[in-house]
Length: 278
Image (cartoon, rainbow, N blue to C red; front, side):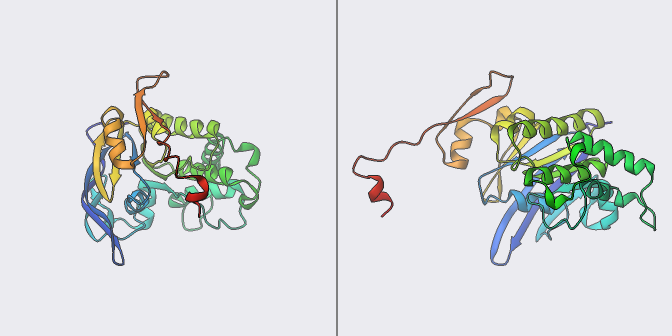
């Protein structure tokens, strides 16, 4: 069950850098247990670096990350895999495995020395496969399905891992509209039914506004604003962050803000297409 007073992740003065490039520049924020927390920001703002740092996949150059009141760097890989599951933005070479075999890998942190799955592990995997609408493809090789189906298989593996915390880097980017809503709804269900903490990177402002409890807007490696969708999704804040022409109003589907893109002003008549592309 969700403990609203419990901090799932605490980030203090977090810095992360690549050679000669500073990416995260002193971030401070917390995520409460059971929150649906979505990270937004323009390209190059540090979103993927941040979520990979939270997953323990990137070394940090300063500050601290605490997972369930314990420093991230004190966990072994196996211990951490029982605390959090991570779904990358793009899936690499998954090898010659079926979707069912890939999803069953989510049970690895709980298996004994022989690494043999039991009936309970198989049942959990089958349920996760059903959740992500992949039952009809469960025995297909992962390299024979579409990119969107492969992404759903990785989400299914994360669900099969049965952690209290799931980190996802743009999980809906390769999905059609129906499966975008299905995955977002599934994360919302995990939050409500199991108290799962969901931290997600997204470029879709409207999906984020619909589902998130709180949003964090990153700009140039810094926290521009962190708060509820109503606090973050407003025209003044977003125009500064993205430099785009847009309007924000209330969604007719519910009590959350809606972002509407506006056509950019036309160039002067003298700037013909032929002139622009010379």
